[in-house]
Image (cartoon, rainbow, N blue to C red; front, side, top):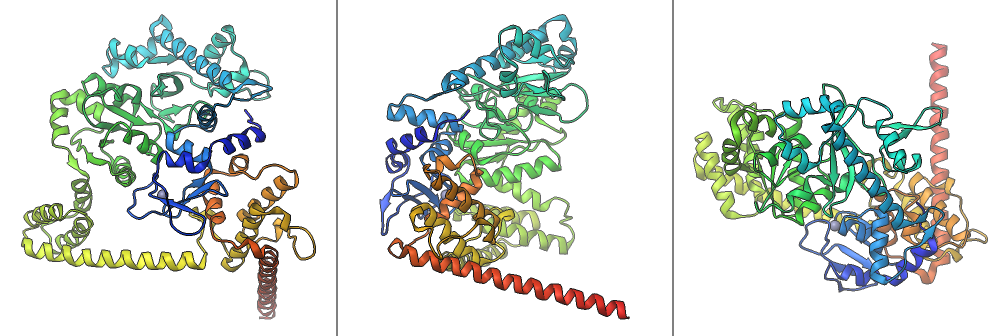
Length: 583
Ligand SMILES: [Zn+2]
């Protein structure tokens, strides 16, 4: 589905980024062209989130997120690209465009209707005689018929054409089945076949009640255990949670985050109606933000194995950034919440919830694990590491409480533990200061490497100049052309910067707009984050011609140096070979 550039252009013009962002973030003007505010995407105390009204883009120098008004609404409202476009079109009172495939909204509605029809088909299949394997599995997991209905569970038969044939009979096309992520094209290109086969089907329902995707659990052993719908125009895996449509109505005051869908169903059945699961193994920042809209507290109920512990630690890091209160369940003697409830009942699970450790205890437990605290050396090592965790706590009361606990646990006097905590705290503060200084120096030198390691600059001096060329192409393409003022993307030392430059140049040459929206088809969200950072660095346009000539001179000089160095290396290698041959 392609939304015309001209529409995106008008959409951006009619939704001024300062107005739109201003609805979420308090922006103030300091100096220069940019407005600043506290970043809505990470927690911070001093504003590093900036908006540039002239370029209509934002960039956070803290977490690196950036983009235009459409990217902002995508992130903020947790929407897919077409949904964000719709959101802003509605805000500006614009009609959505129609293309060859029909109205955008109509097509989305059609995919949602197909998903709903598929959910009904799977559900029927579970009830009918042929659904015996699915029913056996449901019975084995102790799921009641009421819960099967509440979650709309279904069965995908062990057959390549069940769903495909049924949906085609209802008037859906093969292309629609593929677009919805329910079917794949056959090898050889003729016809399509079902993706979900011989699985228990969990419809994924968004908070508005739409069936947006499916998660299919394998009935026996085998991989993958859960197969999720790939991302489609109505579904983004990283931005949705299984069970949130039901859990959002819970009165419990917290959300219970489990690993598997089956845990969620079994928790709901046992009366814990705030259980959700991330679709896949690890929690994403987008999912965390989505949860933060419904609660201030998350209880992690991940599997009781090494992978689950690791996933918990990772999730704690993400959730803490959003200032969510986090507790972690200790599922002693069971591998997951489902098994725990089956074996010990819901009363025991409630007790577990009430006694669940906060994340500090969880982290301390992690440090203690595998250490024999009756051995002095191990005790000392434990204390040092644990004191580091306690030292990082912002509240003095909390530090006091946990220092007391460490003292009791190890038999080391509380005053000694507290002294160690204070020492580490001073060191941490100093470290933060040095980090801030280093950060400041780095941004002065304007050599901020891309966050994505795969995109790192090999040659920083050349990269600074290349960033300048990219910035000038974005700000004023008319500067290019003429003697000494043109350069080819292949001459860039950074392939990413070369690509930015090449795409911008082609768009400008074709007379197209250079908005972020028109670029989102050519670059990943991480690349767009980086691009907005480059564009927001200061550039004096009054001297644009001279600046461009200087940048190009630097790039070519660095390239020559690099070539000379390469020649030298090649020469040395050849010499070495000759010497070896002589010997
Ligand atoms: Zn940020």
